Structure formats: structure tokens, C-alpha cells
Image 1 (cartoon, rainbow, N blue to C red):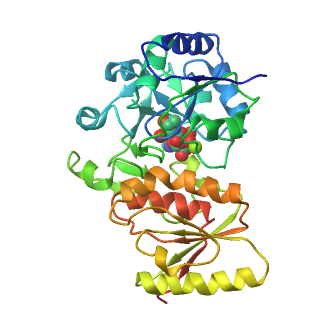
Image 2: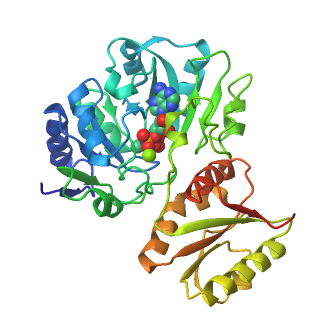
Length: 354
Ligand code: TXA
Ligand code: MG
């Protein structure tokens, strides 16, 4: 099938494109659209057959549930059995925005959307095109990131096209790259205590201002234990990965980290490999060989998050075999950055301080 790409420069003037996309959604089709985090691949969340089309287009394992996107807070009511009082404070503080809230689901949400779970993940994105599309469709949109399963999430329409051209009928192109750049924070509110299953733009510190307590799932910086079924099925898959192999270097000082990366660089270059270095503004001057990309300043982890996937895609374009990446402090936005980098690296971390 031909994939139409509609550029939306002005939401009012280009509303016909949103109307066309909404018509496709109502017919049970899928459409890619921008959000403030990453591009999503949306379908009617209440139509199991439409949702199946998302899984097919992405090649996504069907035991991995989808996030349901709404355009108004009140729209979650028919979708959930119950919402603890704190949910309202969370929505008040962070919606629209990069926070996904998991609640016990009602019978309205089909099992295809939640992969058979008794809970549903809900989010109100903070992006005018996403909100207009949901509103015009008149239904909540199930939407995972608009990439082929296992690869990097797209932060531009071009990225979506690289993965899904020919597999989906339409992409709405939001002109600006996604502002947050990493997928939303996934917070499970369906149990005793709130638990962050996937870190994102809404950081633990921000959540603590609203919640009495918030736990971190143990698999955020570690592989999920194969003996337990993971709380967030998505976390068990190799994920967020560029084609090149990624190795992360952690050190007690930036100098030590850069030295070890340079040692590894020499070795890989000696073997005839093409090597990428994911550096930071603070360490750039330590490197002189290989494909060097700075992820930005360590002082501004939110900006590192915004550009991370695009940088990893750059290395793939440059055709590198291996990416030597620096660790960043897993504080605030840094936790989401390291959660994604560690998975991109298949948990391969060299700790140079030992
Ligand atoms: O920012 C985002 O969240 C983007 C944009 C498009 O909104 N969406 C996104 O969706 O990242 P996806 O499908 O790539 O990731 C959804 C994550 C997966 O790790 C999935 O396992 C988890 O949320 N999830 C969804 N429903 C869940 C549920 N009921 N219980 C536990 N985890 C759930
Ligand atoms: Mg995804």
C-alpha cells in the first residue's frame, strides 16, 4: 500500500488532513501521528480488529499491551473500573503530558488492546495534532510507538517512513521533532502502591510532589527476571536498539570513562571495525577518531533525552558496527535515558571504576 505523508504546518489550515486521518481511524485503519514524546501508530482502541492491524504493521508480539490515548480526562471514565483518588491529582498535575497511568480496566476495552491483562494504560498526550486526531476520531486511540517492533522509536515523520513505509496508509507529519524524545513514564496505579514501570519525561522527583510514595520497578536498569512474569511486558523485550551493537562505559570520573572508551576504540579500529562514540559536550575533546556524536550537555539531561534516538539512528546511517556510549547519571531524566540505553546495549555495561 502507498503511505501518504501529510505535513501539518498550521493546524487550522491543514485540518482537512486530520479529518482524513480520523476517517481512516473510524474505518478501522491505522494512522501514525506525532505526540510530544515519540510518534505513535494509532487505531480505535475499542475495536479489536483495528488494534490487530497495529500489531501486524509493527510485527509486535501480541502479549505486549498498548497505551490508550484520550483527549479529555473525563474520557477515561468508561474505560476503567475504578481510579484511586490520587489518579485525579496525577491527571491534574501532568495531563496532557508524558505520563501513562495504569488502572483496572472495564469491559469496554477489548483484550487485543491490553493483551489480555485486567488493566489498561491511559495517557493524554500534550500535542495539538494528537489531541485533534483523537477528538475528531471520536474514539480513544490505542497507540504504541510507530516503529517496527524492537527498533528505535521515531521522533520525526521521516523515521516512521523509514520503518513502516508501505505497511500503513498515512502519517501525519508534525514538522517539529518530538519535544520530549523518549516514551512516556508508565506508572502503575492498579496495585497497593504506585510503581514506575518505565521512566520517562515525568521524573520520580516530579511524581513525589503529588504522591505519598512511588516505587521503581526493579527491572528499570536490569534485565527482567525470567522466573517472574514482568509487570510491564514491554520491558522484557530487547528494545530501543539501533542496528549497531552498543556498549556502555561507566566510570568513577569522566576522564577515566573517556580513557577506557579510547582503549576500546583502538582495539575495535585495529580489528577493522567502524566505531561510533556517543560522547557528551563535557568529554568531546577527549576523542579524535571514529564517528563522534555528542548527546549534549550532562547539565541538561532533558535535552539529551530529546535527541537520543535521533543520534542512535545517525550511527546506523553512518554504518558503524559498534557504538561506545558514555553513561549518564541516572538522576531525574537520566533514569529514562539509561533505561533505554541499557536495553539498546542488551545490558552490556563496562564499569571502568572496578
Ligand atoms: O510516549 C509513549 O508512551 C508512546 C506514545 C506514542 O504515546 N507510546 C509508547 O507505546 O511508547 P509502546 O507501546 O511503545 O509502549 C507501551 C509500554 C510497553 O512497555 C507496555 O508493555 C506497557 O507500556 N504497558 C501497556 N499497557 C500496560 C499494562 N496494562 N500493564 C503494564 N504495562 C503496560
Ligand atoms: Mg515502543
